[in-house]
Image (cartoon, rainbow, N blue to C red):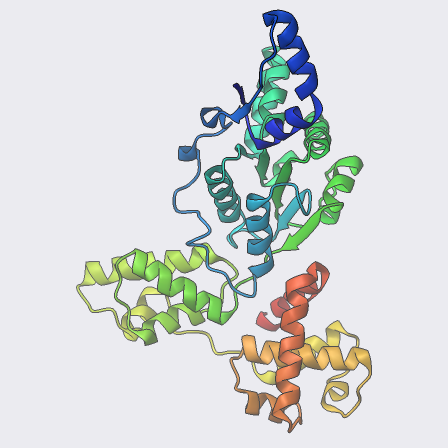
Length: 381
C-alpha cells in the first residue's frame, strides 16, 4: 500500500505509472506484488482548523444575488476541476466571497480532497520568504500538491510581478493535472489592470461569477438568521426595519444587529422599532420616487423617460422597461399593480414577465450585473 496526498495523485499514479511501479518492485523484491494507492488523510495541505468554522455552505444565505456563485463553489468542492477552471468570484467587499472560499475548503476536505487556502498577501509573503531562504521548491510543492487551491483577494498582487509570475506557473501546473483553482477579487479580471497579461488571460478563460448586493428578501433572511445566532428575539417589524435600510454590505447587517443588541442591553429598553430607529442612527431614508428610477434607466440606455412610458417595443426599450420593473420591485418594494400603473402597463402578467426576465439574466450575465449595479447607485444618490 502506497500513501498519496490526494485523490488526483492516486488517479494519476494508477493511470500512468502503475505498470512501471510494479516492474520496479519486482526487480527489488524478486516477486510479483499488487500495488494499492491510498489517500493519506493526514497529509492534507491545510488543517480543518484553518477554515473559519462559521463559514460553511450550510450557513451561507443563498439569494438571487449570489445563487450562481454558491452553486459554482459547491460543484467545485464536489468535483474539483471537472467543469470549470479556474473559478473566479468577484464583487465589492462584504458580499460573501471569503465565506464561499472557506465553505469550499470545508466541503472538499470532508470529501477527502486536500484544499489549500491562502490570501494573496499570504501567498506573496511565503513566496518572498521562500526565495530569501532558498526554499522556493518547497513552497512550490506546497501549492501544487493541493487538490484545490483557494486564493483570496487578488488585489494584493498589484505591483508584485515576481509573485504574479509564480502564480501563473502554479495555475498552469495545477490546471494540467486537473486540479481546481478558485480566486476572489473586488472586480473582474479585465478590470484588474495591474495583472500580468498572461495571468489575466488565464483567469478570463475560466468561469467568472459576480456577487451582487443582496436584495430585500435576501437581506431579511440574513437578518433573521443572524439574529437567531445572536440569541435576539426580534419582532418582525424590527427585523424588517433592520433589513430595509439599504446596504451593499452583508457584514453591515450583522453590525447593525450587534449595535441594536448593545443598545437594548445598555439602556434596558425592549427591542422595538423605536429603539431600532434610535440605535441605527435615524429613521429609514424615504425611498426615491418612481420617476427617479425611470430617469436613471432611461439615461443608462440613452433613452428618454417618455420612451419608457410609451407603447414602443424595440428590444432596447423593452429591456429598459423590464429593468425599471425590476428596480421598482426591488428598490421601492412597490406591488405589481402600482408598478403597472407607473409604467402605464395594465397587464399584470407583462409586469411579472419583465421582473423574471431581469432576474434570470442577472444570474448568468456578469456584465449585466455590473450595468444594473451602476443604475442602482445612481438611483440612491
